[in-house]
Image 1 (tube, helix red, strand yellow):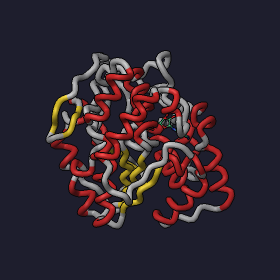
Image 2: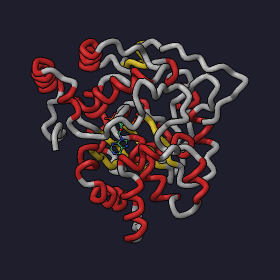
Image 3: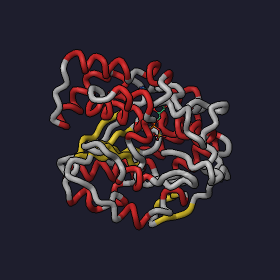
Length: 300
Ligand code: PPS
């Protein structure tokens, strides 16, 4: 995502609006026609997540699995958001996600989206592309999103924590309701077999095991050495130091407010929720999360 120096970046915070029943900002809807007309290829891999669920982590794992052995230069000079384009993004002065994806020279193409399942361009389904969905428990997800919205200057103003939490429960977040997102993708799994649904908490618990499952889904069999290298490279501390994956060069983020690679933990919500907030959240959660087959862990 190279920045065009002739165009000035507009760093005003965006406003949420209702887009086909989902709260969105214009950065992710402006290119709607081109996104919907995107021509997927059968070997494209679509990585879908609600924001802050572990997208970058799994993007990097996928990139290393497919291209880690091929080019050292890729690993040291191309930021992860250029290797795994964010399909729907359209920021001023940057190449759109669609253009970046169309210009990817490698195959398979690894493509990221935060769209709810009903917004995915139809060619991905028609081509029966492999899709990977990563989900994270709601409490840690909202905490991570709060810090991200503070440091990402194009996001809507997050306000204070308590009003942010309220908005999260109402689904008034960019990319809409967490509850609808995780459930929508989970339901899709019942009818679309080329979808691998993963959990952030499982990744923290045992990254190697989850990489093995991912490899089985993708039909990959990395050598023992390669797997060791990947598992090590994608550890939180290593990713945090790695300027190609820690977003340190991404123009719209203010790292003085918060780093992108912030904590990488399960259970950080306990440092943010009051007891009353947690109880109210749990009550509301029970009403919204009716499917007993979709279970999240808020501690491991
Ligand atoms: S984004 O902006 O939607 O693409 O963000 P995303 O990459 O989905 O999520 C960022 C959160 O994932 C954490 N992260 C990790 N945790 C553990 N291990 C590794 N390797 C790792 N890589 C990224 C990152 O720190 C953000 O979570 P928080 O809780 O804010 O730290």
